[in-house]
Length: 250
Ligand SMILES: Nc1ncnc2c1ncn2[C@@H]1O[C@H](COP(=O)(O)OP(=O)(O)OP(=O)(O)O)[C@@H](O)[C@H]1O
Image (cartoon, rainbow, N blue to C red):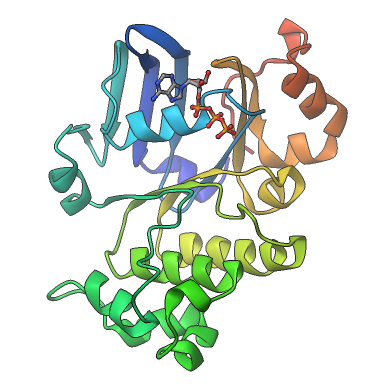
């Protein structure tokens, strides 16, 4: 068990069923993420990953089950949720493409929060791009900006939907370790939805594979890293029931 696992969970999801127009897209899902931990939330297209993130941040009501974050039940008023330290980086990246980098960062700056310059500790390249219009940035640069913007909000729970969408593997290899460093240094609980399975498992502590809205596989990321066949079976929904561990940790 790692040190983070001894603290109270920053995000606790217990037996949730959630979906659209009364039709469940995710069923009976449970997991916990502790401060400083990264959970890799994996699974094929349509497995329910985005649905899980939306429910976790309060944007989608659960049909049953409970979600609590930072010691209190999730609030469906997103503004309150974000003030309490929950942040979602959507797959659309959440940057204003028509504005410059410096304007994007300024918009995310909070009174009394960290200075804009603190973003350059992890993303020094952004300092050289301050006057660039975001729409002209590369995908990797836009992702750095998206993470930089969210860091200025000092999140305690960070939910990230496909950080690497449209990025080259090299750009993903560059950005994911930075996310690992940020989560550890700032004790942020991260849920990372990611299609680059190996890269996600390389920086994650725990992992969970969804298939058709149900947990097909869960366990320490290190274990899934060692057994790709098991992960692939979970993606195809052919995991045997004795290979569906509870969310134990290292
Ligand atoms: N707004 C919606 N209304 C109705 N059904 C939806 C809606 N959004 C998603 N779904 C359905 O819910 C299921 C789960 O979708 P979700 O987007 O959570 O999957 P995902 O794992 O994030 O997929 P992907 O990797 O393709 O983004 C899918 O069957 C999808 O068609």
